[in-house]
Length: 234
Image (cartoon, rainbow, N blue to C red; front, top):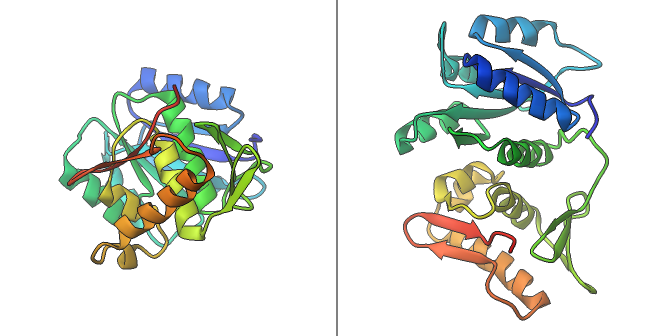
């Protein structure tokens, strides 16, 4: 990842803001950190080529208002990824955040490593990735994000666009249950997968491809009424 990938971090907690900024910079992101919506709007109006803002990571409750209003303003800006971070964990707030165009929602306390994974997943899904193609290694699999080829030893499987998007969503939260609502938000044809058992069928297709490569424990766990989880690396 090169420093050409510009992230706008909006967080009014000074210690958290500075800590996340230092961590993201250590991962070679270019980071601008502010503590208000006014500061964020100023950055967005000034940050142009060659370093436009590619993704926003924002707390919801800020001193001068709710970031929901900012995300609502940027709803049509598909060229900017958007991730909420919040101490509030209610399902209704997560849904409200996603309805304003957020690509992901992360509850506090925040794991910086998990935040980086989610940032990369959003950047890839929106075709905003700023670095060269690198394989993602997990559970003895290798995923090439550009070709969408999933490999296990000498076996290669071509993933469809939807299967690839689904796997990236699960990878970004590996070891944690991902709700159906969150998975819907990560798929391009959201309305299609909200109908009937379309999402379950998509998960089954991905699972069959992964299990077809190796005789092992099912890597995707189903939690009925809650969502799905990709097994954590041992």
